[in-house]
Length: 266
Length: 307
Image (cartoon, chains in turn green, purple):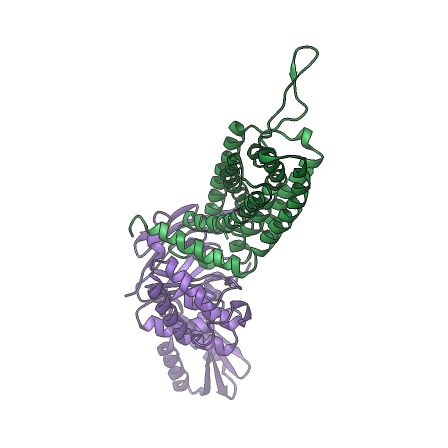
């Protein structure tokens, strides 16, 4: 066995599992969500932009699109990844898979990619629609907005890692999906609308706000108080903190998920 | 050429329960070995450790001389497994699933295709393999499960109750396939509750009780004791029972309705000698019925224990 053998195995697993997900119509739900959110964002953005011109109008149009990207990606990761590992135990297919000449690390890598790559397709679709709409309605796509893509990929890594972690721990895929949906989607919506003052800076939901703020130039605005002290009414994630936090979530959750999967017994 | 399996002083504990307690046995190359034991004796746990599904707490398992824990990929390369009643992904065809497993085991796309066709042919599923697994009957799924164990022409098969849930015809067919594979030189280790099935297929056995190896060897060695019921015409005279009890190799003799029941060390030859001696004493023997020797040996060794 040469050094490329495990990579070949990862490629085979990724292809097979990703094809299973596409055949089972699993991709349809996140794509539909992405399309619906695009329509709603277009409606909001196109009304708001009428009061502005030039680059500012483009940024105003983009704002609802990029602000909703984290929701689309969280939904996609939940649908694509939460059952990947738990199904081997729940469905007992692991009694075959784990007895093959195949290390669990390689199997984990293949299943991770089989969830990540279809979600990446959803990401590309979402941002392609976003930038096409912006180019058509506003006449330009601000270069700053293109930073949204690598930020979104980093966030997608993080939420996919979290979904894989839930999948490695949960006895059933439905439980993993429910936990992922609650923590990554429902809680995010709740925090953005009601609990934003209580959201800690190190939470993935808070730092995911960078996807919606940085590409359109939103920053924390400080005001000078009467006592000479700077204050702000609204902290916006800082890219210098958001990126390391999202990377930490991606790395730590993925490593723990891999270890749990490695040592979990049938 | 067949594979070998060595289980050396293996221990496995779940919370406070010791499922396998220093079990040791060997499966020789080319043998068809039954792994027997009462419910909860540690058979399934032992097989799962042999097939990388569980990690032993201590001890060593060598498949074809390779430690399963140290080099899992190499150890499992020569082994085909059917453990418990696994499910196959329902949304794929049987053929696609087998091709996937073949490719993941290192074959090229073309080799995987022909290998899948070969094993489907062995289990008699070539015509039905292009339907989705969710449309298969239980017997069809079990055939695909057996087929996947044959991918790559492994030197050893490890099977945990492979005929569980099959109808009698399916069980016979399964047995025929396994016998043929063993005849080709494959080593087979099979756990089963059906002792009569084991007797017809296997040439050696390992008996596990309370997580320990209670007996191992050829079936002939393990079933060296047998019980026969001898039907006679007329009554058995009281002196006959005491004479039979004192014969060499006789463990116990008792009168039963219509004859006598004798437990003795030894197989058919000893039984034939006993009948000859009875006839020479004037006893009119008209029928001899043998109890299931493996079942007897099993009950003897395990003391009739169960979970």
